[in-house]
Image (cartoon, rainbow, N blue to C red; front, top):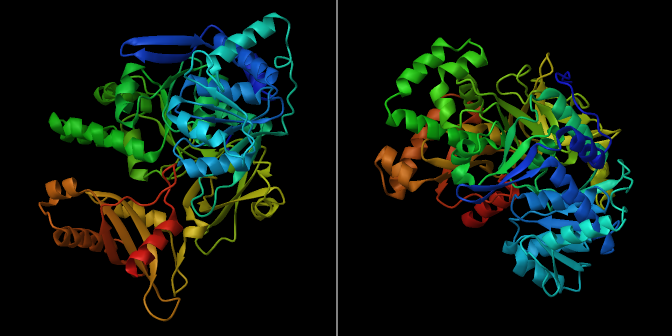
Length: 572
């Protein structure tokens, strides 16, 4: 269990958080919004809380007290205002994945029983079509982009104005609403890597305990600028980005798209970002290319070795040129939602950039463990946050077993699925489904998903994620999928195979080959080189190459069963 390093604000629920932080940070900027290139609009923390009160009052006036209300759209401040206006006194919020196809979106609208939905213009046609289905309870459509209402559609902006009038007339139903921190307030659908998505039920207590935990171990203050990048419906961005920024009185700015991250880091002088490993790898390669272009790579590599044992502050000064490429103000990068290559983590730290790895699940609100400036080990997800306990069950001879956790951030359960809930929560311990080991100092190392493990005839376990990381390092490989293939009639006679998604342009540029047969030969040789670095039982015996991306969830996690099914279909 991690020790608390910094003072933190005690909060009972999200309404309590908004009230307390309004007094602390009211006049500081909460959002800086780009109107057009070079022109911005800002909102203070006080203005944000007033908008929340106004909108919440208007929602109750529409008859939505105690109802389920969904939100779908791109990352923007209106999304965040809508979320808070629902959970802080109106009803239950249901954030929906903006990447879902219309049929899946319609299914979630039905399953969740929502009666109103906030949405951006990109989803107007789908939402208006879904409304007319007799299978759902949807009554109210609320558009984030409309200035005034149109037939059958409310304007979020207009509702905020209406709510302000109601409050002026003495309506205090939302402002004085009492929150039960242990009741269901948030319904989040999982990404469903192995099965149909489940609806996770979270409370204010779940989220607030996590905010206090994160606030007590990470050095984030009201002077920081957080860049919102990951899809906001995802619990990692929602808690660690959006809610945590408001909790600390920081400023939130919004990314213009993945291609613009480095540009945005500079434009807004960002100090903190929570993102996925692929983004940090992309930023690292961009920096490396710039250094190569200007003939400075060798000089930087020499400095890395020379200053390897220096303090982070000293490294920051030595590698100032690199820090300036990223806006010059970066204080903390947080990596989550997937495993981070320990070599990338090490490289950032050698350059004086604090890159910490965190781990969590939707069911844990989400953060279970995180590295910090003070407590970290390369390759580890850190220690558990202060309120969370962790242990390993059914460990093998190497100390690897299922990671189980306990604490106030563990979900209330799955919606309408008692069997699934009882399958993962036993004696108050949540069974994560992830295999891990914990060292003698309490640092946790994730090894892979329990359901993904390939068991060989000799009883040895293969963790696909570990081997995919090795294959993905081959230049020209975009992504890979490790799977077991039955070699004979003996079902236990399994050999390791890999499906490789390659980039033809990079392969052509690096290896000077063009045909599929030539590409297959090059990649086969590279895989054989990897085999030489590992025990024989782990060796990859066969490869499939393709340019078609792997089947993934909307949060970019590999859907293992779906990819296996596709391989089998192709084989047959």
